[in-house]
Image 1 (cartoon, rainbow, N blue to C red):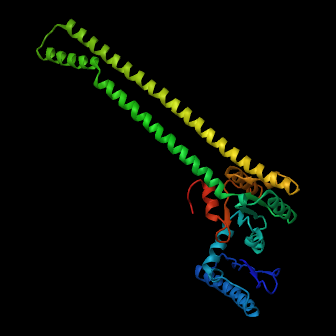
Image 2: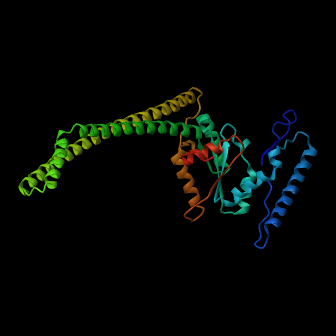
Length: 340
């Protein structure tokens, strides 16, 4: 899947791309055992070709991962199931981590399938560098996007902290409100009077006292006292709701202030880059083609690309890439939780 580089003292510009192994086509009447045998046979033929290349030049380096059929089976599965394939590369050297043959292979599986080159760690690239790569990929007619999983993860982590603070504040308000209501109940003289009247009423009934006028007066006093207690509870609940709304309003203002500060820091970094460009007399061009997409814009972009390929309700988007290019980080940021 990678590129074979000759030793630098021979020819630093010589790069020989390796073809990736092709999975044999599955036929309808083929048994699982027979298909497994054909997969292994196709893989062994590919390995023999690699061995011949290694014999020709000892400076060729084939990693142990490329000699493991299970690695390629994972790739085959992702390519087969995906409506669109996202190839993640490191922005510090995109071509070193890009596999040209993978883009050809997915077209062999289905000509309608497309690939997108996701240039991760783009926050480490200056504007002139991003412009250089944008011009190159546009010239080669390659779909690409700039992205920074680390930058998005930092923003999401900060938001999670603010949400946790808001949650704790809400819990404190609820505890305080419940405590005040309980205190009012315990100190409510009207409630004590109501209980006393209840016992008097029971005593009168037990003594077979037929004075209905007295009983009705006691009942009216009981109902009136209960209504007063309910009114007090309702009033305290309304006060607690007002306090909670004030806390939520303050937390919202704090969050907006934090987001504004983050945006101002980003603007300062961008302005600093622009100053450096002016000093070096380089052309300052910042367009959508050079923009480092955030999480929302990346999801919107992927949806728009895949929906233009397939007319389905649900789509499968596959993510592939070499180790340490940021596959797990990108997927976790997109899903907004740790999935990989």
